[in-house]
Structure formats: structure tokens, C-alpha cells
Length: 382
Image (cartoon, rainbow, N blue to C red; front, side, top):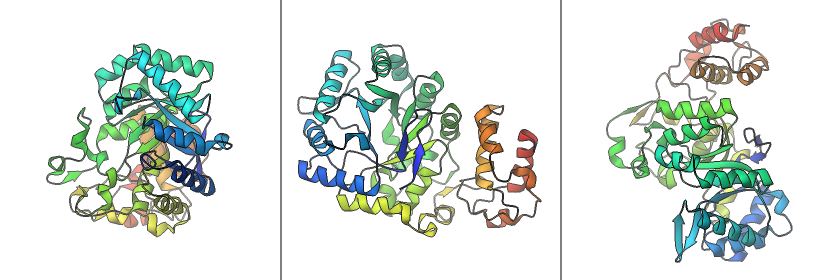
């Protein structure tokens, strides 16, 4: 298993994480099997959005004696009421639900306290200036949560939260189809057939800017819906008009700026083990570039996907990384110090480029690499 720093939190998380939906409705014995497989495979991050009390109790039992091996991303504002899930902003309900969660998990703290499901700018404003954010910050100050997070499907609401400086972790829906869609308060449109009518070209600028803002500001991203609820893996359901593989979707999410971990919704323990095997899979099984370039309804022409097909450079330049740092600087309008430091730490920078054009011949998306290298020299210097 490979591990990544989760933004500025100080936490180190596994690239493959575990969402809770696959465990909901399962017996305590099966939940323990999931946790056993996670521990054996090196998965150390678990997202806990589901408020189902039986699931939380079962997970608490499974974590007994090994709680310190896992990073829990628990959600505030998601409660169980009248036998069903409810999202709430009522502070009394939030406090009661969180206290019950800690008790059932048999712990006195969680590493990430995620403000649940903020999908509109108006809701973000309510959260930001209200009791929920004050409560989250109090929990962080007292050490009950280690970092404040927020989950969202809307790049506009998410960007406002990231720019506020109040949020350390963003849980966001990242996949190659959702990334084409502009921000909207109606999440149903993310997979509605009418949203994919005709040909779609390149990533929504607001989503690209969101990922880059997270990278600049040290906000780590944990990914939900990397497979679009499974639709991307099914040719008949895929909005792209063609099925992608599990590993292609995982690799796409993990190559976006600021992404640290992908939360799986594995419905069985075997599905979890297959996803963990991503780390040992050959590169050709992870490669999404040629598949993306041939999708009948989507085009990324001219847009760097950080896929690495431009390699190897005869001068040893990591072209994908240089391009990522260039995009971060251009989006900011200046060179943030952290970006400059990362750029300077590269074994070879853009100044080593001899404009041979070998990378451009290999790029499936027609990216003007040589021109980008010149821009990088202009912005970063040697």
C-alpha cells in the first residue's frame, strides 16, 4: 500500500480508503472481516458518513484493540432519526448524533470531523457563520477531532469552503464524467443523461480550479464516487458511452491535484481485496489515457491529464509534474512558495527541455508540451 500526506493535517493516509456503504446492513462478523482485510492490505482510512447505529456498533467492535491503526473520517450533521438517515444543521441533533457515534465506535476522538453534505453556497454560508462550524472548531481545539472537513459535490460551495481557511479536508466526488459538469445544487444532474447530450469537451474549469486551490492551500481531498456509483464500470450505464475499469477510475482520481485517498464503496470483502490489489497492478492496467482518448462522447483535447504518457523524457524531466506545478501557478496568478519549493525539488526542471518533441508525439490529448515547458521557465526561472 502507498500512503500520502493529507494536506496540512499531519495525517498520512492510504491511497485506497474504505467508505462505509458496503458494510451497512452487514453483521458484526462480516464487518470484522472487512476490517481484517483492511488491516492486512494496509488500508488505514475509513469514511463514516452513514449514521446507521447497528453499523457503527459493529465497526466499533471490529476496531477494538486496533483503533490506533485507523484514521476515522466521521461526519457531523448526519444522524439516525425515526429509523432513517437525516442531514441536520440543528446543533442539539448534531451534538447528540456525534456523541452517540463516538460511543458506538468505542473511541473518544476521530481524526477527521466532516461537516456533512454542503452542496450550495447558501448552505455553506449558513454553516460558516453558524453553530455547526463553531462546534466543529471547538471539537478541534479540544482534540476530539484532529481536523475539520467538509463533504460536497458542488465545486462552487467547496471552493468557498477551501478559500475560507476553515476546512482542512475536502471530501469530493471525483471521476472523469462528473469532472466535466459545472457546479450545481442539484446533484442528480451529475449523472442525468441530459447532462451528457452531445459531445463534452474538457474538464469544468471550476473543478480544475478547486483541485488546484486545494493543492495550494494544503487542503487534502478524500474522494467519493470515483466510479460514479458503479455506472462508469458498466458500458450501458456509463455517461462516457464506454465502460472504464476499476483501476482506471482509481488511477484517474489519484492523479488529480491534492487527492490523498479514494474511499471505496466495496459491497463485499472480495471487492475490497480487488481494489487493494490496484497497488500491485501493472501500469498498463491502471492507464486511463488511451481509454479516455477513445471515449465517444468526451474529449480532453489539449488538456493535460497528468497521465504520464509523455514519458520518458530524454533529459529526465517529469513532464506531468512540471505541468501540474505550472497550472497551479497560472491559476494563482503568482507562484506560491510551496509550489516553487516542489518545482525546485524536481530532479530536472523545464529548463532542461531541448524541444525534441518526443513527448508531444506520445501524448494522447495533443497537449503542447514544448510550449508549456517554455512557460514554466518564464514563470519559475531555471
